[in-house]
Image (tube, rainbow, N blue to C red; front, side, top):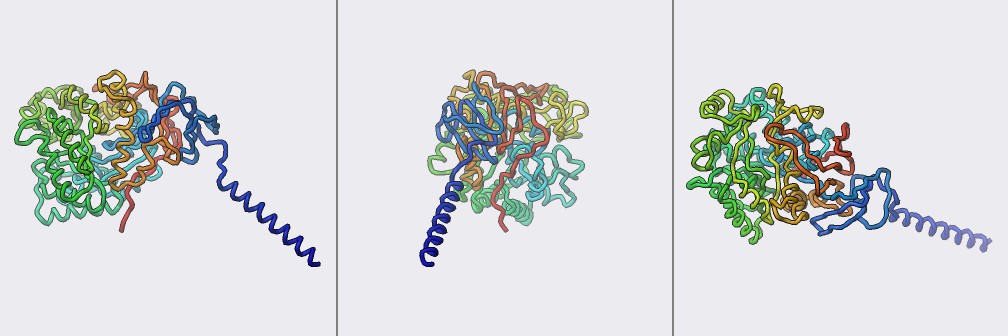
Amino acid sequence: MKNSENQRSHITRHLSAIAATTSENLKWRKPMAYDLVILNGRVIDPDSGLDAIRNVGIRGGTIAAVTEKSISGIESIDAAGLVVAPGFIDMHHHNSAVPFGEKVALRDGVTSPLELEAGVSPVADWYNRCEGKCRSNYGATVGTIAARERTFNPAYQTVFAGDTVYDLMAAPKQSNSTGKWSTQVPTADEITKIGGYLEQGLKEGAIGIGHCAGYMVGGSTTQESIIAQELSGKFGRGVYIHARFSSQMPPTSGLLGFLEQMAAQEVYGGGLLLMHMTAQALAESQRALDLFDAARAKGISILGEIYPYDFGGTIVGADYLHPDNYGPNMGRRISDIIETATVTPLTQERYDELIKTAPTTNVMFYNATWETVCQSLAHPTTVVGSDAFPYVMKSDGSPALEWDVPFEDVNGHPRGAGTHAKFLKMVREKQVDIPLPLAIAKMTSMIADFLAENGIEQMKRKGRVQEDTDADIVLFDPETVTDNSTMKDGGLASTGIPWVIVNGTVVVRDSENVNDVFPGQPIRAVVSG
């Protein structure tokens, strides 16, 4: 009897050991097949310095392998002759979560278009509207424009769930916009209320604060600039600013506008991104970049962003396009402003008419010289952003919103469709003489690192082609990638970018957008009470 009991005990221990070993093996063993594999591509990962032929395995929205070994998957892409890079991150995209804007951005390799300049408000409403409806990742700041409009105008109501640009510029009548956000100087109580809207937005997870002082030069107070930076420091986030002045002449130089915000940053902390800085500093751009580098050497988190064009896009009523500024301070003429819908240079008479009757009319305008743009893009610490502006239908000038709108039926500034492909072409043609890995870093890891160090922890998993990071990936042909959008046809898609992947899901396949997939995820700070 005793021997029988000992034997049963021995068998039980033996079976338990086998079960434990099997469980441990299953726990650590990775299945051989992946959801998607990218084979034989030139993987460029600026963060790690990898630049070599590798195979990439994706499982469950995550990069599970970057290897020289043979791998297989449910679906495979032959990437021979293509660069495999992190998906491009665009911090300056006014079409984030707008289907047509996403469509053209994806064809340009952008997997994370973010609305960080104008921002949104209410923040929670905007993120709720986007959930489950986006092909690309989405995220936004809380904007001072909307905070000011909400303060000054009790009749204001959002049409686009808090999207500032679309509410106040694309749909001003529907939102009951008064335009007071641009011109009204707030009282002390109103400044407190504006600050309250900004703080509430940060608590709701806004990436930071979008401050467009350049659109409210005579209305926004320096106190508001200080409050924006103070709150960013308090919450550990950043200010994404269109600085107050666009000028290369005293007393209102672009440099002075930069210094207004940099002074508050020195005191209160928080990050600071100077958006489309060449359009503000113009001929003083190199001096500005030297200033930013000196600040970074002191441990200050600051970046200069640039789009690869010598002309911008905005509304005709923008403060900096007033003839008193645009001519003497920016070195341009009224004919350097082009009405987007007709691609016709403005006359003084037409400018005056639009200011009176339709101040939110879309225009394009020449700003910095081409030489300044190229030199600034080549600077090792600048990053690339598109400032993608809303597209309008050629037929009637209404906003181009829907996914199925044909590329050729719209117009708008070409940067919304072509920024990243254009920059890669400029690098290939040595107009911007930098190595390709640095060019990619300016659109990926440098941006992800800035966002991560300013409160957006999830960005540590983006802007990289490494194991255990998010599978946001773009494949492009370094010999043919190019932009096709022009002033006359601003929505034409880039070419030479045949594959784009968002969180492991293919959203551009063989140079065609994929319909009915919505893998986009929110990019957002932790929501607090």
